[in-house]
Length: 193
Image 1 (tube, one colour):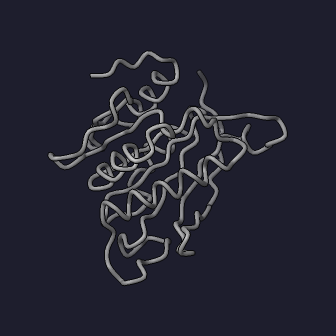
Image 2 (tube, rainbow, N blue to C red):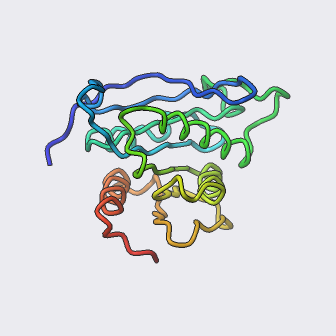
């Protein structure tokens, strides 16, 4: 498959309390003309607690160039460089607030015409890996799979039957592994470990 052209867009999802979560959307060019009816798998990504959305850029760029939409969010209460609102009480991000941010971003993606609603994935790095698993367990029917990057040793388990990739950003083949995982799940080739 040849690499697809994609464009980067900035978007904000809105929590019920009106706090905003910033994200960078990588959308294949075909998806920009919504009248054509193109739908794509979507991976909503969250960085480790003290990083920002650029931590996963190598992964999100590879996904988008493979015709998989990526939406990398900045967690509320995350590092100094995040563009999302800070927590109302000034606290840092937690697993729960990160899971809430992922859920909010996933809902935004589900409302977009380019989103294949049957092919929505979560991706989390570090403590956000736990947040991705937490959100997948809260809303099992919404997600097709979870990508767990550099997770702490004691992490939750994904819902039974849900495809999960455990990997590390330090792996030189991480982008390809994530892309292949998503494509394998879509093609129903993923076997639950």
